[in-house]
Image (tube, rainbow, N blue to C red; front, top):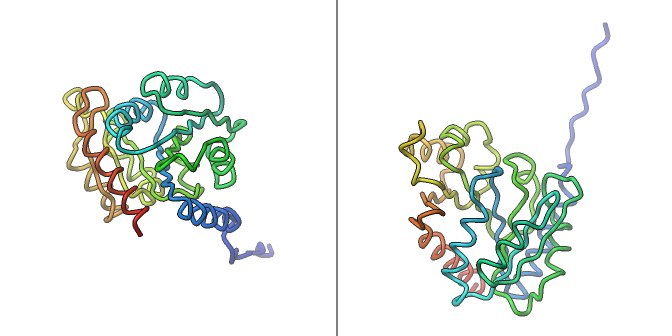
Length: 224
């Protein structure tokens, strides 16, 4: 039997998106707007964490939120009602991620001249969102205790691209077989440079550290 033909791909299939993302970052830099891409699996507590965080920083930073989902406007309505900040809903039309062009379309719906910070709450998924550069200045993700401490080993790309990992729902640590220190080591094995913050969106524990991280990152972005 003849051998099959093997074709080595020399260019990334994401090359076009990567160029769009770099261009978007440069545009945001020129406008002084910091874009945070927040990712996680469904039910990890992204929206609850954002509500807590936004209420801590909304008097110090001008911000808005883009909520990305396949359908519904539940999260956008919840964010606006609980914080009072501008929140718009992005429908992906069935796609499980946002790319740079889709993010740009969302940003076009915001008044960027009036913002220091735009937060993108990406579609709940530990796979697809990690594969597409949105043009963000920083990537952050949330891992919740009920998901298990082995997720960094199972979804390496997600953890390797994130500047910050929030370990949420630490208020229920005693209810689950979750080893916090083992989880931290698993994260660092994928990304030695990741900052790790244990938090509870329910009680507020640790959320102030996330809020301060955001403030510091925005100020550094605008200063350089």
